Structure formats: C-alpha cells, structure tokens
Length: 503
Image 1 (spheres, rainbow, N blue to C red):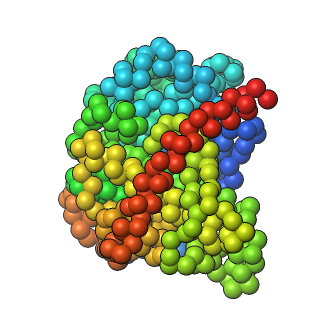
Image 2 (image 1 turned 120 degrees about the vertical axis):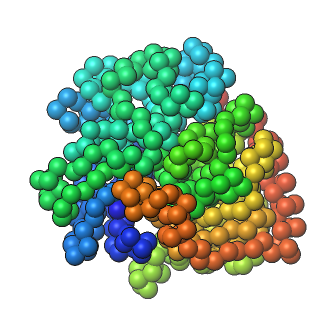
Image 3 (image 1 turned 45 degrees about the vertical axis):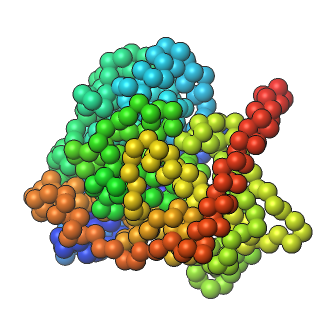
C-alpha cells in the first residue's frame, strides 16, 4: 500500500505483488486561511480523511490483505504534538508566508551560504525551521507544550501506532538535516530553537520502522500484520514511482504544485544562486535536484472556483471531471495571451515573494479558452526555464516523465513537449508518489531485491509525446518573451509591494 498526503487531498492505493492496481481511494480537504498569506491544514481533519481512505481500500482488498505500507507527503508542513498525542495547532504549509521576519533573522544568524552548505536547501520561508521560529516568537506556549514536531509522513506513522521516524528526503525539507552526515544539524536546531528530542529519528527510505498494533489495524480494516516502511517527500517518492532513478532522467509532477525533480550525485554551490534544492533521493544512494513552481495545478483550481461557472455546469450535466472540461476547451493552437503564474510569488525561479500573477494580451476578443490556454502555457514556460537552469549548473535532463493529475491530459502533455522541447512520457499510473512508497514497502519486506527490479516490474510507459518541430520554433521565441516579462515587471512588483505595506 502507498499513502500520499498532499497539500489539498490524500490518496491511498493498494497494489498486487505484480504491480497491478487493486484498489484506490482519495479525499479532498480544505486549506485554511485565517489571515492573508496564511495557509494551513487541520491535521486531525487530514487524519480522518486518510483513515476513511484506508477503510475504503481495505474493504476492497479484504481477500488479498495488505502486508506492508509506505507513506509520502507534502514537505515542510509540521504539526506540534502534545505529550498525550493531540495536535496543538494547525500545520502551516509550504506556501504560508507569515514567517518572513523569522526567515530574515535566520539568514542574519547563519547566512544563506552556510545554510545551503549544510542542508542543500536555498533559504526560503517555505521551510519548517522558520515556521517553527514563528511559533516561538508568536505562540511560545504551543512550543512549550510540544513533545514532538511531526511532518505528515511521521505524523501518519504516529497515527498508525508506530514510533515516529522520518526518512532523509522528508527530513531535508525541514531545513534542519545535514545532508552530508544524514543527521539533524545542531547548528540549525539551535538557530530554530528546536530540541533534538522533539523531532523524529532520521532513517533511510525503505526502512521498516514498525508494525501497526493489532487492535488499531483491525479498526482501520487491515487483516493480519502490517509493516510500516519509511517512505519519502512526495517529490522524490514520485520520481521513484516514475522510474526516475538515474542521472539524465527527470520527473515533472503536476499536482497542486508543479515540481521538476532530476537525479544528480551531490549538491553543487551553483545551485544556491539558482534556488535549486538538492537532497537525498527516496531511492537511497543518489540525490535529487528540485525546482518548480508553488503555483502549479492550484492555478487551475483557482480558475475552476472563480471563473469556470459554465464549465462546472457542463461537468454536472455530463457527469465529467471538471478539469477535463476546462482543459479540453482549449484549441490545439497557441494562446494569444501570456501569463506569469506567480500567484504566490516566484519562489524557486527568482525567489521573489513580491511577484504576482500577470496576464497580458487581453482584448475584447479574449475568450475563456484563451485564458486556460495561457495558464497551461505559462506553467509549461516556467518548467522550461527551470530545465534550462538545471542544465546550466551541470544537472543533465534528457527525458521527462510526467506524473500527477495534470499528466492525465494528453493535450497538456503534448503542449509540455512542444514548449520544453524534450520527450515527455506518461506511465500507467499518474499517482507516482503512492506507487513509489509502495515500491519501497515491497523492497523493505523482500518482494524485490532492488528498487531497479521494482521499477522494471511495476512501471510501464503508456505514451511518449515528442516535440513537434513546427511548434517548437514558435514556442522558443515565445519562451524568450515570457522570460523577459518578469524582468520588465520587477520594478512594478516592488512598488506594488511597497504600496501594499504602507496601506
């Protein structure tokens, strides 16, 4: 079984030893925004939805029960847990920006270069340590009562009755792991005001960390003994589930966020200037280089909620998926509009929290499908620029495997190939993170001799989209225009941020 706890929803999938998908379930939960710029999750609501998925899947596989499971989750979000096991606060997610002052204080204390040298992470407000510093400065009574600070991989393991352990890839997303020693950094812990005993033990992905207690297992619908195996941060776990195990291969994960994950051997100093994260792969022995966009598929969700009344009606009338209706209206032709997808800042490409979304080219002839086309193209241009950045610093990217909900759209995948100018492959499952941690569970319990064997047996390419030469030339010119647009708007962004602050 693979459990994936995302930013806006969770999924549980069960696989046969052959790799065949036996059952799956998913739930969507709300992001809570009590103040502008605050985005958090209710951990108990997340657990209730995971629990419901476990019950649903276990009911479907009662004749072939689960023997082991792995867990993947979004990064950074961490929940303070009291000694009695209760959550003391909601968990701020990566895009929560309330801790900008704490992030600046951390940089002043240690320096961005020193932090990157230890953690492989360019300093940003997205990480757990500056989020914990916000609690220290604004709600110290919470940290005083905190027995454990748990990311969602170790939080779900905790809810499954297992002593919390955190894999190296997830631990790295806290900004407290030394990626060279693979242990908590005393320097970062001290700067963040975190006690070592408050954190779970770091372990390699694919380690058996415990067994669900029998009574709890029965309550969750499991039959027999179930081993819990350390999984991974959802991006490297997804890369594993996409078969991205060797240099030259990369995964493009198109979910709530859009992440580009390429395999590499080690962190490089040049990565810091390009805002590229580098930390342990969920496949032990390699590192991954991570870049992408925090906006991602969340931008289509915004369009769905704010502008897609007509598409919602069509979806309701025809019992179709709303996103299929939204995307399929887009003609197979370039959009006349150009969109910058910086709805929560340009985090990884330019590290500019003042940047905002921009849509240019609007006229009275503009239609909804032009806006949707610009959204799909803008996210694809962003991916193309990130690939250029990786190649400039020596991380080879020769072939892309696309996963996540967005990978189900063949129209979008062809557009990605045309804009990125690389082959884009989709596999038989878009839920690569769940598949990846299920592979880790199989490897840890002896079903596979190696993860390479698991990938060969379980991951089947479904289709490869090749760049169309007649579109590549146009989109390369358009990419240059897209790249220049942010630079043209930088001064306006700074002025708008100044005016907003004064108001």
